[in-house]
Image (cartoon, rainbow, N blue to C red; front, side, top):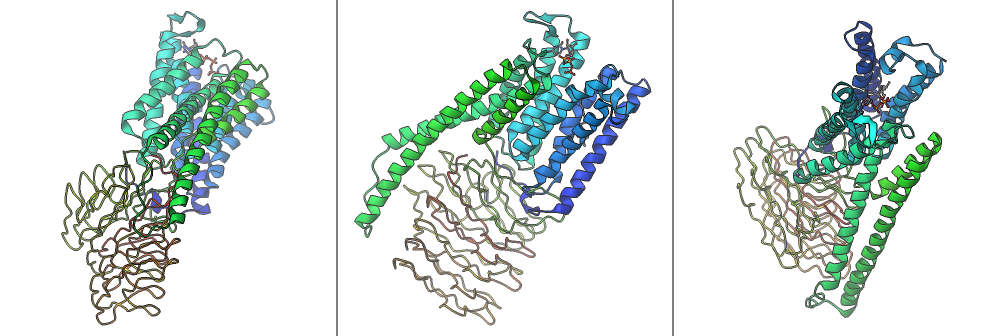
Length: 629
Ligand SMILES: Nc1ccn([C@@H]2O[C@H](COP(=O)(O)OP(=O)(O)OP(=O)(O)O)[C@@H](O)[C@H]2O)c(=O)n1
Ligand SMILES: C/C(=C\CO)CCC[C@H](C)CCC[C@H](C)CCCC(C)C
């Protein structure tokens, strides 16, 4: 499930926003515990029930405050302050340094203040670990915390009431309690992860999410049912669930690497060099292939070591009798897991008055830490009455066969009543034979009541054998208020590492108010390093006061590293007040590490008040390191 979200239009860093979120959550935590204190004091709730309800609800509510924080990397530290301050409070009250009978009553079983130094304190420590190590872009942290809160909490409530049938291997636990743990944990984790998926922080393949959560919840239930709770607090043992999931991720990764290796070994030799490809070029192609294979083997080995380490840590964790060393082991284990865990690209938090990111392309696949981004970031907000697709994001990268999200599709043409397809993104690149999305298609012509096709992209380029799209369709003429870039060519192919952008399309005739370039001929192909820029796009016939970039030609192919950028995509004809990025070409393919983003996508035709990023291309493929989905 690839969803569009509004998240990527949130400010990257906002201390005000983070302070506000922190303040809200801190006040919320105090008020929440007070509510249960009052309910217990007034006899509405049994003290044990009140304590468990605080246990069940505090964690999920805390997790739900995470989207309030900005996309600043420091935001997670702000958020961590919430359980840290609560842990300090528990330490102070539990140790007797501060007198707070209300807190003691609401979070202890029997009213003994020293109880605060066990379950409730560990609870806060686990929240701290989950926040610092996983934060909102990893499902593992949310999963582990949700299982600790929803699962363990419900097991207590149900087990105490309906737990007459005890587990054969642990008389302290019951079948009813364990079943409640399984269901409560699954429900809580599934609900929270779904929220974070719909907000765009993590991507949930809907078919696998429930299964994965169930497996993790079963593992947690088994761990909790073991007769080890005298040695290991349930709140801490719940964390081992995160380990199970991390081990699972590590195994998946291992399998993935093995399949890449097999694929590399079995795949045919590289195709014959295209005309003009010199021997040196071919040699380096082969060398790259070998390097890739070596890299895969190395990663496979690492995954194996990681998985083995997880289990060895688990064993030591459960054998250790000293609480401090257990916590230290959990911390070390979690650090290990994070390196094997799947992280989606951090999406900035949403909020009112949010705006488009400055450094990431709208409509592009988000860059990932290790290329495991499961998300595509949304297209820019279209104009009034625009219609967004229901099953796939407009401008999102389409899933590819081998899970390499390498496609960029243009953002929909906004404008009044513009319409985007329901089942496929407008201009989405078609899946290619080797799963390398190499095509991009232009955005439909905008304007009032513009209409895009439901099942096939307008002007979509046909899939090519090895993804060298040889076609590009001209960009539509934009509506009024479109904006042209200041320093890069509109519609130009951005430099790619291997530079195989092979197309050039004619620049459309600009409308009134277009401006001719100052330093290069309009429509001229830019010089490339090895002089292989073979195409030049025709110059647009400039009208009065037409606008073009100052430092690069309209419709020109940008210079590539190896000089093979042979194409230029057309420049949209700007109208009055047109808006486009300042430092990167609209519709240009962003550079990719392995040079597989081979196409430049056309610029979306902006409508009134259309908005585009300042430094990254609209509809461009973001750099994806390995790009696995
Ligand atoms: N799978 C489970 C888990 C718990 N329980 C019941 O729930 C109550 C609390 O269990 P537990 O969480 O193990 O107790 P404590 O450790 O005392 O509580 P806490 O975790 O809140 O510290 C006990 O009566 C236990 O029998 C159960 O029947 N089945
Ligand atoms: C009784 C508890 C555990 C026993 O197993 C839970 C103790 C909870 C802490 C006293 C309070 C924790 C507060 C959270 C860190 C933040 C909640 C914020 C939210 C907005 C309510």
